[in-house]
Image 1 (cartoon, rainbow, N blue to C red):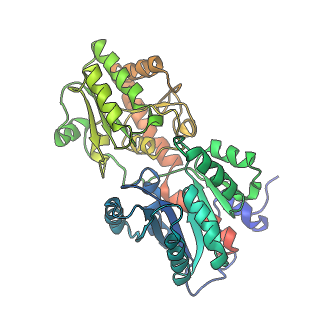
Image 2: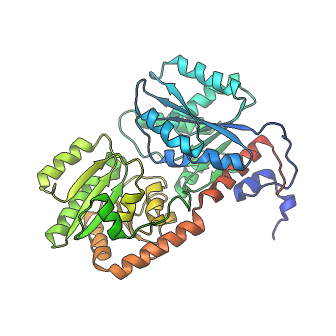
Image 3: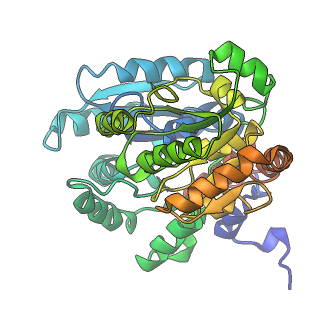
Length: 408
């Protein structure tokens, strides 16, 4: 039996992404949201969501600023500020000298008081812990976090993940980007009313093909002959780029004319460079390093490959689908939500070189299939993963935790 919208509780409306019909209780100053994140260098996938949020929040009745904690002197913060400027995203720089740096807490308390922050929106384990430390000094503030996925398990990260999960139980709302993270929250016995599934999304107009593959290859300087397999991501073990490189070497051995270019940087770069030299594939495998705006790269790809064995809901796959690039990806975490196997892409088991090689071979040899997958990927992106729709859901969650009602 359906429940009339007027009778739905605020939390239910937030879950459904619906704005309440009651008039807004705050009319003088839009509520301030402070996004908080720890970053080294120019960041990663979550930055695409965080930096793009303020302009949409402004249209929906919220102010926002972005507080980025970073190593002192890290030039990456300048990159983030320059990326944020055209998006109306004000990036606040907070040098962070480590876990005992009390100046970070003092600075965050100062910001929250001066800006009258009403929503603290954390994006990682440290910003979630810091929210709990800052809150006693700013008790009007509500704590919200987005779970982007716990993919890095190296070093001390397992301990930090335990601390993060402890923190989540004390948050007013946990935004999960994929279904597996919703289940993680349930396992932590977080009340269902505080768990919200909101998939990642990107701007449908910002990511739209403007060139043919051939034209993009010419502009990018990519080889005109043969196929270009592309990948974008942090160079870290869980991305399993070594498996992808080996698959491309095998495809070349089978007689396929193709190249592999990987955009991104990270701790595994030296290992991947050594592997490329060992396999003798430097003529057709390139590590491009950081690419600030990969749109041209996507347009030049014949296939997009994601070989990770741990992910959340990767924006890079959404971006490839938006650019009508056929996708081959591992069947993990939120990927089946993005890609319908055999319809809008091909899904394969993780850490399986044979399956990866076969799926790539299928797409590069059957160009009719590639076109169909690319078009279906774009359609699925438009239907399910619009950034504007995502931000409506986020604002409904903010409204709920603040007890704000507003007209439809």
